[in-house]
Amino acid sequence: MQYIGHVYKVRPGKADEYVRRHKTVWPEIEALLRKAGVRSYSIYLWGDTVFGHIAVEDYERLVAEYNSDPIAERWEQELSDILTFPNADPETGWPEQLTEVWSL
Image (cartoon, rainbow, N blue to C red; front, side):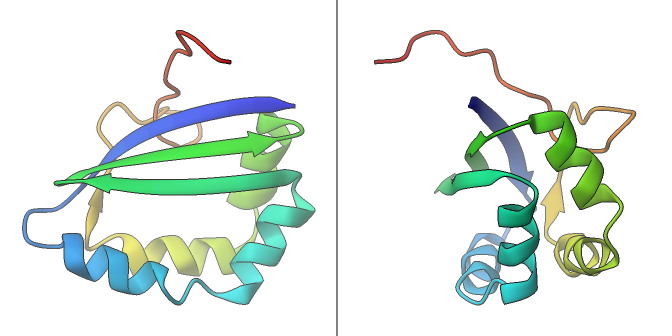
């Protein structure tokens, strides 16, 4: 199991909208994430900073399957007006992975 942390940003004044949209995550997105090996995915918001934590069988597989799915492309388009991804991976577009410092 791999544990991945990501940080990205909500555009100014869009935090409430980000929360609202995640109250109704499409079931197809949840199914896609599960099919791609995600065991848990938690998202936290602090001001305009978003922290995501993913437990996944194979992160590279997740990225490849997600990025090639048209439903995921539509979901990302739905969020593109409210998010920014500083330091995104230039090859995948995914947020930069954080370095794990400690785990219990």
